[in-house]
Amino acid sequence: MVLDISSLPLAFQFTSPGPILVKIGPLTIRWYGLLIATAVLVGVSLSQYLAKRRNVNPELLSDLSIWLVIGAIPAARLYYVLFEWAEYAKRPDKIIAIWEGGIAIHGAIIGGTLAALIFARLKRVSFWQLADLVAPSLILGQAIGRWGNFFNSEAFGSPTNLPWKLYIPPERRPSGLVNFEYFHPTFLYESLWDLMVFTLLLNLFLRSVSGKLRLKAGTLIMVYLTAYSTGRFWIEGLRTDSLMLGPLRIAQVVSLTGILAGLAGLAWLYYRKRPLPDVVASSD
Image (tube, rainbow, N blue to C red; front, side):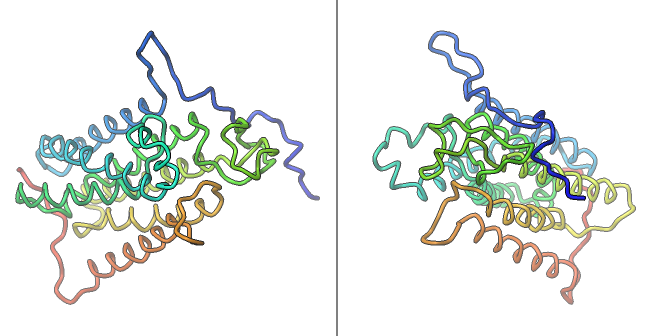
């Protein structure tokens, strides 16, 4: 028997209420900005909690979070603008309009990594220890932030008639697809994938601090890099608004690089002849 899923109830169809949460006079609060702020606050709180569990001073993570925001958000916007320069060159006033959407997580990762490397060097602490404490917060923040794409009606996939289809208003549809109303909610796919990766990382972390599992410093960030990139590579193939470099989807190229780098990093951590120290607690 073949199940016709197109005949299932329509309760899972998604329709965005729009990008604006509330507008009071000149003050406009957008869902996108609120979700990014929420992701940052939740991420900082979680990383501080994880630091305490590993006997690391949580204030160190508070200081690091400021560096990460300063490094990640501008880099995420710059990355997006550079690959969409043909459009932004026509409207340079929109380059800084980050509240309207248009940031790239790969740009944020690059900017955040550079900021964390500088921070670790200045504070004379282990970059890999810091990265492991941030990794679960990072992927959870991504899961939250992806819902900003829902409210902005962006980052959706190809047309579909699945029960969980996403309605896209005509003005937001890609040229050539204006006659289609429903699309894959790829923001949802990635958010759910990110939550699964978060669960994996948190489980590894808790098993580590409880003594049930021995991990090398740097393991969690490498698992993050491998697991997130695997899901992103597949999901990116469904999207209609990918950043492109010629015929290549940039996110897929970067994701494939991330998978290889993550696997190589894990091999380096656990199979090199001179063993690296295990994760250790620190009172600083």
